[in-house]
Picture 1: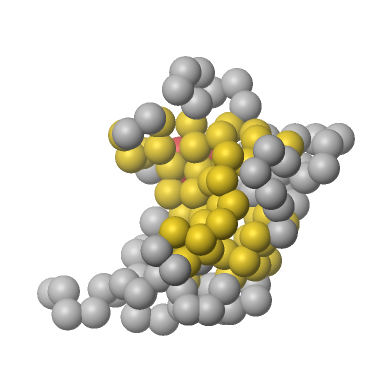
Picture 2 (picture 1 turned 60 degrees about the vertical axis):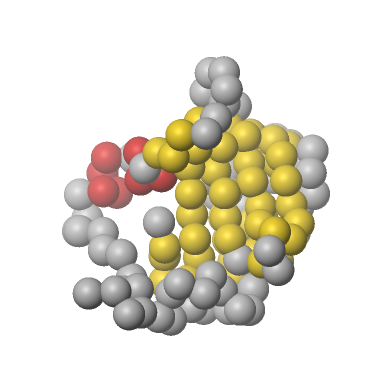
Length: 124
């Protein structure tokens, strides 16, 4: 899922977990968090293109170093190349299966209006 954002905007953790990766992939900054108590293999959120403010192994949990909703990094330049404007790519996986990251949000937030994807250049 791509979320409109401006370079320098804070990127916040969606849920409690442990940072499983923070670094470059293909020239873009990536932060991945394995979510606590979500089974085996655990759910994993990924944020791209991010200048990380956390490191691999950091806890994302209430009372620890970083709590859900706290900043895990900042939107970097350039963003994912598939966005017409700058955006944060937010993903969710269990093992090798991609899932809908909106499933992590509370229902009341999803009722606020439709979500929409940013246009992809050169794709009708």
